[in-house]
Length: 202
Image (cartoon, rainbow, N blue to C red):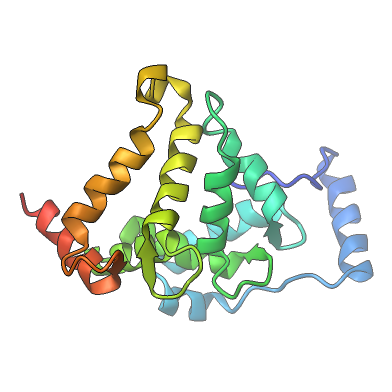
């Protein structure tokens, strides 16, 4: 299961790999995930699903954590036609909930649980957190423009021809016209959720 290829992972025989992992375990402090029962209670995955996810995560990243550079490397494989570096940075920060510079198995599972099986409210909260780059509780036009530019860069130049270089800014203006209800130049979590829920009922 190719889940999270880790730059430090080596291709060796299973016996050698186990020996290497045993040595690494004794030589370095590894991140130990929370008990599966606890993660099961905190996520929408079954214990069996968590075991499968953990095996894939551990096989690819024996240290038990993914740093930002590795995360960007992984993400770029999904968008070879563009530059996903900036968007992957924002995404990494959304997964790295304790802001310690790495994504642990727990971080990964909790984020994935929301994205795949969360309620509409949970998904919208997660999306708001992604867009609120400085985590001050508001989305500004500048933050939204940074995200939009990152999305356009990730998708490649084919998404906006030379004649539409201002497409990200136009998206931001449209976004704010719909979401900034009191016209104060920022979008709050309440405005964001209310607007998104209206769109989903059209």
